[in-house]
Amino acid sequence: MKRYLIFVAVGPALGGFALLLVTTYLSGYWTNTNPGEVAKLFKVFITSLQYSYLFGFLPALMMCAIDDILFHVRRITPFVRMLLVGAIAFLLAAFNYASHGSEYGIGQWILYGLVGFIPATVSSWLVHKFVEEPQPAVATEPPTA
Image (cartoon, rainbow, N blue to C red; front, side):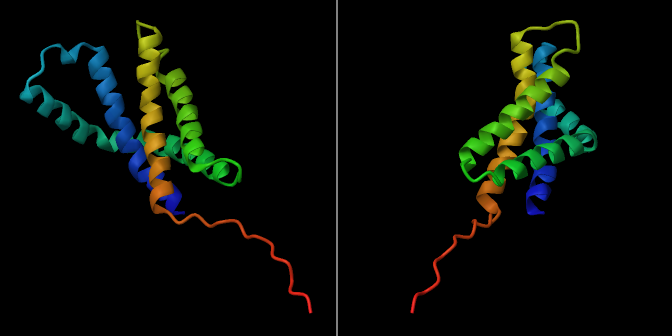
């Protein structure tokens, strides 16, 4: 249960911020930056945070379910699990966001893929770091008399 709470608490916020950074970069907003413009960016992030959670809730749960499934595969180490979850989130986000808009290219595809990769990988790392994961039981031989 803690695994799902971490993914839902962290994933939409990181994903929303990453999406905001990517869209502002692709729109050319970062050509002339000053502290006032950065303050506007954070103001937009804070005001749109509720929508990040509204639309990021289900994708975060889906990534958590994949992380949970991969956790039960004994041969997969936590590092590989983080990379697999991140790669799946990368592909899903890239296919979801990158095909929208007038421009389409590898740069746009990679940037939008990072919108999925970053929150999924960070959430999976936080789960590995802070949630006690039960170790599989090892069968022992009964004592002989």
